[in-house]
Amino acid sequence: MIVLVGFMGAGKSTVGRLLAAKLGLPFTDSDHVIEERADKPIRRIFADEGEPAFRELEHAVIAGLLAGPDAVLALGGGAPGHPATRALLAGVPVVYLRVGYAETLARVGGDQGRPMLARPDVQVLHAEREAIYASVATVTVDTDGHSPEDIAIEVLGALEK
Ligand code: S3P
Image (tube, rainbow, N blue to C red; front, side):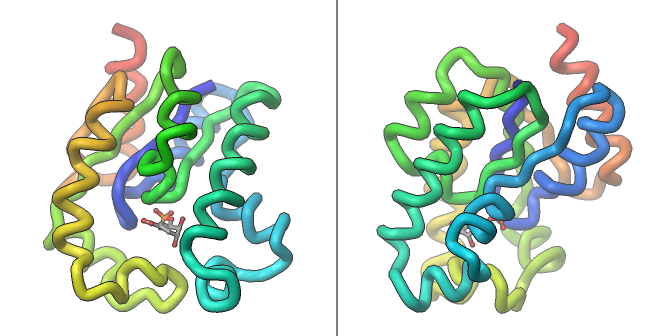
């Protein structure tokens, strides 16, 4: 199992797919599994049930995925904020894809499908989460100005060490 964490727009899904192809593993995105489980898009889960309910569902889905077959698993940007999820990540190879705030906005700014981006304190959230991602990471890779392919190659190299 290889887990990818990082802020929205870090490239977890794009890089994750490339990594999975290179490693011959399936790729799974926890957000997609959550949407299937809830039978609605994430922005609707936030609107109908609120963020705390989303976080509990997110934790349950990730716990199930981590207990399942080997895969490259991309987590939603807020997932490592859940203490029980962080506990499950101990002992798992976790790749932190780091993205700067300006680059985040350039990549995904204004995306209506990401309700956390609409928060007035999103820059504070970005800063606060850096420490959380770093605390679960076994490997950290900077993504600003790098192509997904180059990032995937760098991750592979770092994981081999
Ligand atoms: C969130 C990130 C999203 C998704 C949800 C909440 C967050 O995933 O899980 O909108 O709190 O940062 P991505 O990081 O894939 O955009």
